[in-house]
Amino acid sequence: MESFQMKSILGIGNALTDILAVLPDDSLLNYFHLRKGSMQHVDADTGDKIWQTLKPLGVQYVAGGSCANTITGTAVLGMPSGFIGKVGDDEIGALFHSDQVRNGISSLLFQGDAASGRAMVFITAPEAERTFATYLGAALELCPDDLKPLYFSGYDYFHIEGYLVQNQDLVRKAVRLARAAGMVISMDLASYNVVESNEAFLHDIVENYVDIVFANEHEAMAFTGEEPVKALDAIARVCDIAVVKIGKEGSMIKRGDEYCRINARPAEVVDATGAGDLYAAGFLYGHSLGLSLQKCGDIGSILAAKVVEVVGPKINIPRWKEGKREIRNRIQEA
Picture (spheres, rainbow, N blue to C red):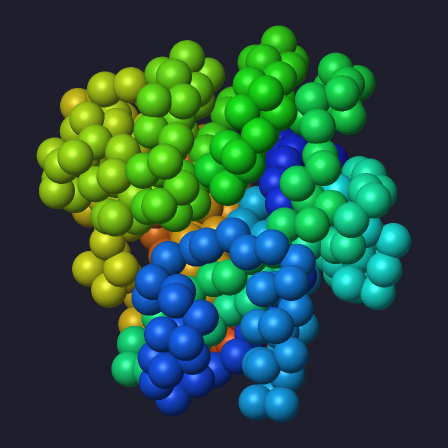
């Protein structure tokens, strides 16, 4: 009965499959001219070249994409969850779709002409930092005309990833439809270089449509020009709830004059992929239950700590069981 009454969430994002490679050093980053910790778009040829270089080193294929990772998290937590994206007619697209179905997501995947999008993820020592070389492929073909009001009806929350801003008309139409449907709109700012190159547009969207903003310290700096605490204040002035994540230091949340500091949970970090995405899933789940900001942030931190202990953006079953138990306990605490 619980899920029947539970609030629902719809996400829109780049339907990408992550191709993960754990590497001992930065030599391949330097070879491909990739800034450590950044997300860079590559064309089909470069994408193939990187893929072929990584394959012999041993890679893992995991359905990913920032928003899809968040929506997978909310679905596993029991929120009715939907996702809109676009894939190609190929094996990687089929893998992405079957992953969504397996996780109970109402998946609306359009088919594009190009190959399915993929993100080559370099996970480098010593802090398991991630650098992305992303070939968007069919994901880039998702267009405003694909979106219809019908797809938004019946959902309570709408989550959008900053990576979509390469298509400003799509983002604008999506948030307008979500606003018209009376949804709570959340946005993850995605990557500092995405924010840097779309700053004016992102400010416009956040100020006019977005209720909840998630950013890490680098994205917050790119968005506001300020260090984390002042950046949090600046973001909180233009939306309802601002969340700034500061890695091992945890996160900070602000709504009006209300401020919370959230401690990161202890974890054996092997790969930081998906930490922010799963934090957003936990936070939005808590918010949908009407919990305090402190509890929302704690639930986000519980999931972030679980996902960094595995390679890739998917928490394994034992860790999900553990995480759900911790979340239940946290919800019941005074």
